Image 1: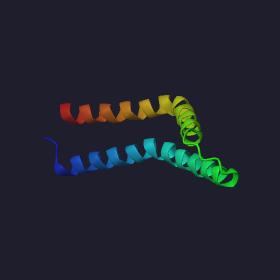
Image 2: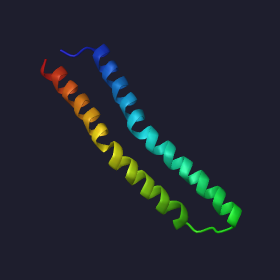
Image 3: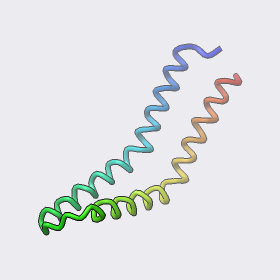
Image 4: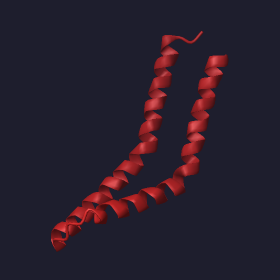
Amino acid sequence: MITAGEVNDLMYQFFVLTVQIGGPVLIISMAIGVVISILQAATQIHEQTLTFVPKLVVVGCILLITGSRIMERLQNLTEQVFRMIAG
């Protein structure tokens, strides 16, 4: 039987994993957006694709680089959940 404390601990682990996976991608995407916005303000070129395309490319590269680590962490947490259910 799974106790309320174990469920709380599991929810905390889910939250921490979500922040660890999504945080770096979001922060880098925001930083790229700010840099591009500053460049757009300086050059007075206001084209929507100038912000979208670089962010898309950078986020894609980040996910390619860190994808295996993200998948490993998700797999470990999923195995832990199944062990708790079975055990």
